[in-house]
Image (cartoon, rainbow, N blue to C red; front, side, top):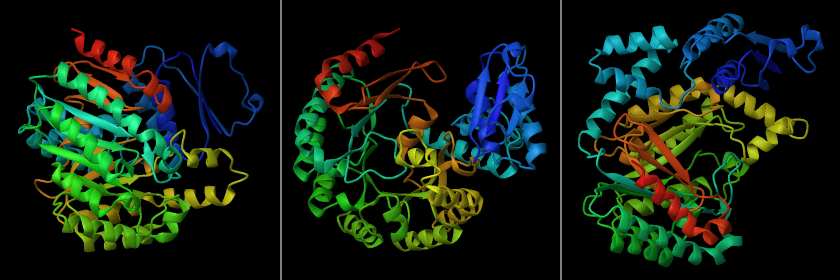
Length: 473
């Protein structure tokens, strides 16, 4: 266990994240308080393998992080790919520097010298920032808005998932009433955003295609009837699980104007799919993808996850080789992040009971860098270019999640939400609405409750939360 004592109650999140990046397999605790209250001798600290004391008084967050990075890098011999950056949007730094008129050389030098970012990741952040900037030129993101609709149902809950995800089999009786609540929220949007430009619509989850074809038709039809969709540049439905995709659902989505879908294998190994709780096979992924192509979908995204338990770079190479045969228009490469609320997190807390899983997971996360190289090379070989990037706490190998796409197929919604340049109105249980007060201005949020029945019983309150947020000056 790593115990870090700090003498003031500040920077705790960043300190914890940075230590965790250096010591991914250790428990890390950051304790703030009066130094006089801390044990004087390390042998008096129960359970601690390493003890660090940090004086944060009079220091900026950057100064504290630089101090930690230098010391822990020397101690461990590690150079982290993203240096001492703990935020989730490193491309924002590159974007801001570009807008200040900095040259490519100045941008990469700043990231390396100020944050210790590697040459490779500095170049990646710069490449993505420049591509995002070009895409955003074609969108009135300052005056427009986007909509996210959350569908909190799945065929089964994956081992790593921490999102609101209820098994559809046991909750199918709630779906119709849930759609009625979504319609109520759509009514609010129609009234409050009349005359404003709707740029993108994203239906995610969960797995939206756990809804029946009729339920999808009813939801999307209501959305189109109540809102002005003429300006929509991208309409995504995250179909996700191949075991939820059917011909009639694809035909409904195509007829209703959906322009982009996701079919997410996560891995092209049947053994891994079983381990992580997916009920489909690799052949189901291939069949669903080909079915969607046959129905005319020309913008299909696929997601994969690096660092899944038991997987090696060889498994990732196999996954990439199989995906190459399908030729998706967009590939999102995720690094596994162990999130609170997931079954994987709970399993890791019970190491003695799940020793084999812990060892398997550690081996996978230790080879994330090699996996990343395989995935990145494979994406570029398919002609897919990186267009957005974000990071998560406890992400495998301290790497990143990156979206790659063919020219003209980049997911606009992904850029808008990750760069936080546009207000996103979020509908459904467990979703978070984000209001951007002008580009570069402050950002405020309001959430819908996660409990499904509570959400449906308090739909008026959920709407009122949004109304108050968007009435603010």
